[in-house]
Image (cartoon, rainbow, N blue to C red; front, side, top):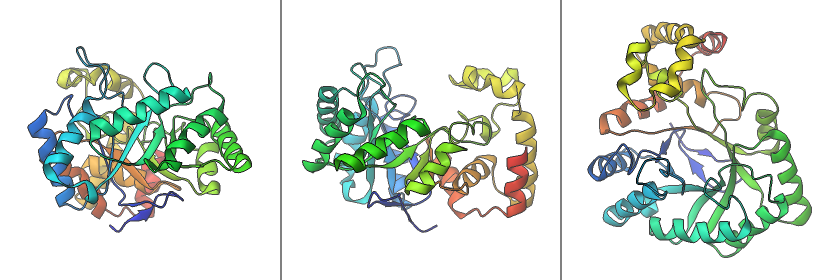
Length: 309
C-alpha cells in the first residue's frame, strides 16, 4: 500500500507504524535488531517509541526502547530510511517546559540522531498551561531538532484548545494525534475527537490496535491468560464483547484467508481519519504477519459486520 500524508506534518507514512515499546523489554538485542532490519527491508516507514518505555519493568528506568533503537540505527545506518516518533510527558515532570527541554535531549542522545521526526506530548498535563507546553515545543521546532509535533491521550476539548492557542499565538500546531483505537476500545477516538481530527486535518496513528493482543485470537479462555504478562489486561475482553467480535473476525478470515491480527489492523486503517495503526512485534514472523495487513482490503459489508459486533 502506498504512503499517506500524516496530516499537515509534512511527513508521509505507510498505513502501518512499528511500535517500539517491546524493544529492550520483551525483545532483546538480537530480536529487536532482527525485527527492525526486516521492517526496513519491507519498506516500513515510521517507528514509534517513548522516553518512558519501559520504566514500569523492575530494574528499568525508562529510555530502554530508545537506547535499543539507537544502537540499531548506528549499526544499520538506516536513519535516512525511517521516520522516528517518540514522546515526552509520562515521566516525572510531565510537560513542564524545562522537562521537555531535558527530555528531548535525552531522547536524541539515546537514539543517536540529531532530529526527531514526530515528537508527541504523551498525555495532557493539566498542571501546565497549554501555551507553555506549545512554547517549549516551538523552541525545539525552531532549533531544528523536531520536525513536527503531535498529541496523545488528549480529549477533544483540550486538543481543540491547543489548536486555537497555536493559531492565535503563531505557535507550531499539533499535526498528529495518537489515541487508543481497536475493535473493542473505540470510545476515546470515535465521536468528537475523530471529527476534530478530520476537520483540522490531523494525522491519526492509533495505539493498542490489537487490544493488547486479544484480537490476535491468542486469548480464548481464562486458561490462556497466563500466556503473556498482558493476560490481566485482556481479561475484561473475555467477559465482554470480545468473544462476539472474535467470531465476526473468524467469519471474515474464512472469506479472505487473512489472519485475525491482519483483519484487526485493516479495520483500524479503514476508519475515517486514521492514517495508520501502530503494532509491535517481537519476532520477524510476527512482523511479517502484521505487515500483511497492508495488502488486505476489507469490503464494506465486512467492515460493517465487524463494527456491528
